[in-house]
Image (cartoon, helix red, strand yellow):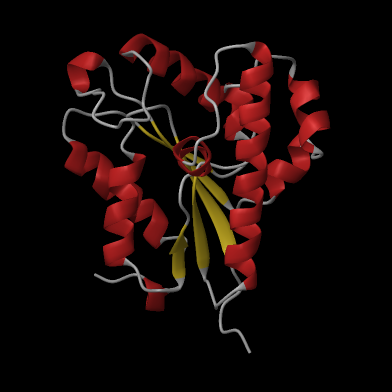
Length: 197
């Protein structure tokens, strides 16, 4: 019998927002009942899916990412005894990259906006820093300029704006402050047994 009633939390934000660094810290500071999922886009592109700038290429990629994300979440909920499934982006993130109308995305993905929002107990949006505040290209899969990253960050903010429990962690030149604020939000989402001091 499972001891926890699991719920999902999304960690989102534009390129270079610090999601990967935050998730590495979460893996060390929370127990095994906090499951941290890999980024679906990293799996898709890192696995050789073509990254094309054409409309058809962008649509295909976002649908592939959507389905990988969906299945990662389903698997995490089905196995073990998770208290929290922490998603490196959620199924709605693809909407910020979608080249067409929102309605097309939902029709192609086979989900409604309401259903996609409802699957997550909370959304934590880490804002992307500007070039002056520390945006960099060290990640080989990150192809966006600081200006392009800022546009994506704004699109993601709009995509998730309707979620009733959306937390925005502003960009800061002091990443440790950003990290601590994010960890505080996450600690409030897990049972006391799962958050290490």
